[in-house]
Image (cartoon, rainbow, N blue to C red; front, side, top):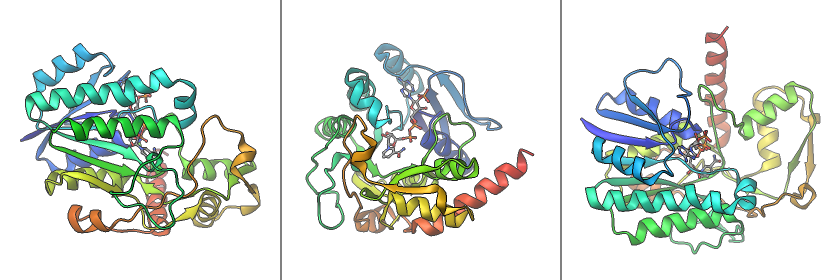
Amino acid sequence: MKKIIITGSNGLLGQKLVKLLLTKKTYEIHALSRGENRMINTKGYTYYNVDITQIKILTNLVNKIQPHYIINTAAMTNVDVCELHKDECDTINVDVVNTLSKICKKNKIHLIHISTDFIFDGEKIGYYTEEDKPNPVNYYGLSKLKSEKIIISSKIKYTILRTILVYGLVDRNDRSNIVLWVKKSIENKNKINVVTDQYRMPTLVDDLAEACLLAIENDAIGIYNVSSNQLLSIYEIAIEVANAFDLDKNFINSIETTQLNLPAKRPFKTGFDLNKSISQLKLPSYSFTERLQVFKNQLASYEGSSL
Ligand SMILES: NC(=O)c1ccc[n+]([C@@H]2O[C@H](COP(=O)([O-])OP(=O)(O)OC[C@H]3O[C@@H](n4cnc5c(N)ncnc54)[C@H](OP(=O)(O)O)[C@@H]3O)[C@@H](O)[C@H]2O)c1
């Protein structure tokens, strides 16, 4: 049995990944996150309540488990919080990755790390390939770029999966995501302001979890783009959500990014070229519209089961 450590197991990707890998029955899963375990009704793995910024605790734990893989999903992911709390952002997004890289080097562990479209400035005409030159416009993007550089220069066995605007359904997650936010806001009859001048390829969290598994199964080394294949403005994404759930589109108000006056700047357009992932990772290619239906079905069966 291959042993896998998953950091950030309480998060959106972390929870989905633990569940996916458990279905394979060929992996021994060690899930690390801080605080109580937020996954319910899931058995067959070990949960550790740890703050992974504590270098000694993290190192001792990895030495004890002796994993074949570490999948690092833990991060400070709120872009505006990163902008306002740069030191804290560095601690989890950069320093932890530095520690993990050293541990992986010493113990010959394959590190799978999640990065972001926000390493780019969004000004490219056309889609970003894995070889394009990064130029982050905010601190979150810079911190993730720093983490990539640390991993690449550490000469370990690594896979970096870059992804875009992740949404999905997990047991308990305090944070919302674009799809749930639009759906809940309209259902509660709250008007929402949605920007027309930022373009993304939204990613169903199940597809990102699948990409982590494919990286292991295909022994994929290097950087890979992981997202849907449909580039939409955030406003168009909101309209798609309203259409999928049969909601009143009049609650969606179109605005421009400058009107939001947010602490962190956002890249304009960050669509990915997915050719490398499709051919080398064997990643299936889906549109946002079709994955939204999958999400809708998941939500229906989840709500049905909790009645
Ligand atoms: N979500 C997106 O739209 C998106 C887009 C591009 C890239 N990514 C990348 O994808 C990865 C996964 O994102 P996600 O959406 O799953 O993030 P998430 O839901 O915020 O999950 C991250 C998890 O890491 C945990 N964590 C943070 N600091 C920790 C610490 N010091 N010790 C232990 N655990 C800690 C968090 O714990 P708490 O829950 O207690 O805070 C959280 O459960 C991240 O690397 C992110 O940068 C995400």
